Image (tube, rainbow, N blue to C red):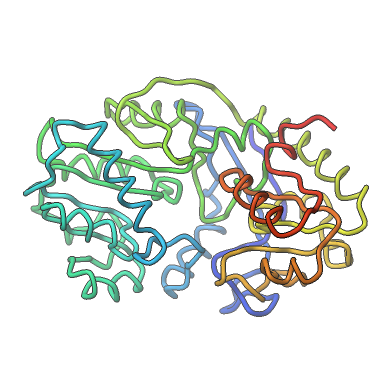
Length: 373
């Protein structure tokens, strides 16, 4: 089966006006299908429409959604990631002299930390910005898509791709490319990807970004890797999946996701319709649901306000939506009657931060998606 949403905001960069630049549309459809071999839920891309625009923004070097790993914001996260690898793979507890490739290396900060631990590292990324960090972190970064003939002749003990698999259109080509570069049967492919399971289960539309072509659960990630002849164990880690050893826990499919979406939209609509002054925290995670419920009427809803703690997003817009994103200080100056937090990962942290400053009515992600009301 397939499931098509005719229009969702096409988000690839924080913007200062309500329109995307460079003739990039504000809205594009998303159509989901289910892989017949692995049950992986993925975008239907045969018409190339979404892919053409994604390729355009990559060529423009303008894909810059919040989250690129930088030293000043992600040092603790990277240390945690490296410690996790060492803990789960004791035979590689010493990284000294290991040859490590990182695909989609971003700024190269992970490579820098691996190099400090004695590894011999190289990264590959199609964007221009990582090259700027290459000199700062003193690591080699190849500017290219993967697979790349620029890596021909090289072999690696470990290949890492973190938050990459969800962006890959041809998983077979990608995984076979990795297989060719692994040094031997003891070499490792480590993949961290978004864990879509809880979002599929509860019908959370914030899961859907046009840049994300694949939506993995533990089960479908295991089956995908198995299909391409990788023996894998999978661990849940910081809402990502890290490949090592695991077995399937749930078998969510596209039909159940569609049913769960309908349930979640009904609950969100009830909350918003029954309040006259609402703050949406983390609007990037909420906008798909809001647009599915209200469409262009969002721009007429003066009772809605958007808030986010990311300074990059302050006073910016979501494509096609006239509601400007405010910050925490704006919320304290003029507080809405109800705050809906659309972050699964940081709901409690955001809630406690607000309540430490002001006693307001707040609903967390769990209360919105798992609650009965």
